[in-house]
Image (cartoon, rainbow, N blue to C red):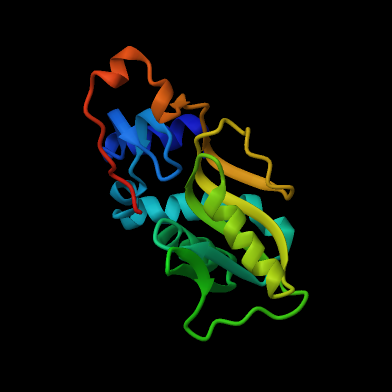
Length: 188
């Protein structure tokens, strides 16, 4: 799947929003990828999952791990396409943790799968959890890399959409964004 094909699916499903948005990172942007709108369509989930799985298969991982909520749907589909186990981390008191009896064996190879990455904070937090349990992060995949490839996670990293989307700190907004009310459409 090409970058343009994936972007077309986002546009067709109304999942690429234009306006003034506050991202989870606290940065502001004119564009927002509401992956949930694209990933509510199972044929699209299957296509995205197959495209990511094809890129990840050579890494020979035993498990896919995803940060909840955004990474759940695509993470599970990538795991299904690879025929491997799927687990997730979720927030507890504002911090991602491994719960629900999920275990990571020492030396187990895991892939971190997320929907959208801007600065990579949740992915890095997930990688830290894997390593704290003595697992090995074999690679990272995401549907959308909003950094244009600028986020360096120190492991093989793959995306379907790679865009360098402008982001701004709250105190450095351009006049057009400052004049437009901001919305927070993403998860908290």
